[in-house]
Length: 140
Image 1 (cartoon, rainbow, N blue to C red):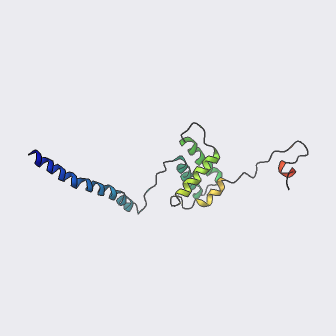
Image 2 (image 1 turned 45 degrees about the horizontal axis):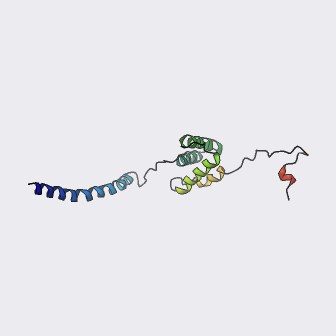
Image 3 (image 1 turned 180 degrees about the vertical axis):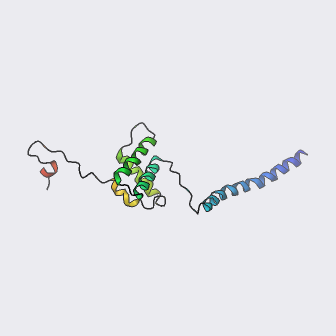
């Protein structure tokens, strides 16, 4: 009787394991077919979340500064670490997320240059003698 029960359990296990693996492989495909072939992407990194916010806001017609402020705040709050995330590092994180997921952010590539544009309104430091800037003094 014990041999018969062990044999039945072995046959059941031999049949159930491949069925389970097949179902596990099939379920994501079925879910994407129900969603029109698009599997929603979950942004698990702070840079991904920042990129999602920045690109959505830019695509919605907001200017760079408003979109950048919102994305940078999210990156700062979701970044784990002892040190604060610098604006330069946040810009790199957004750029990496957009480049790694171009299908996720289809129109965002054209906005990435704005992340690295220097403010035109920042005045360079003036020297005390003659009011010349360093660039003017050493301009060849």
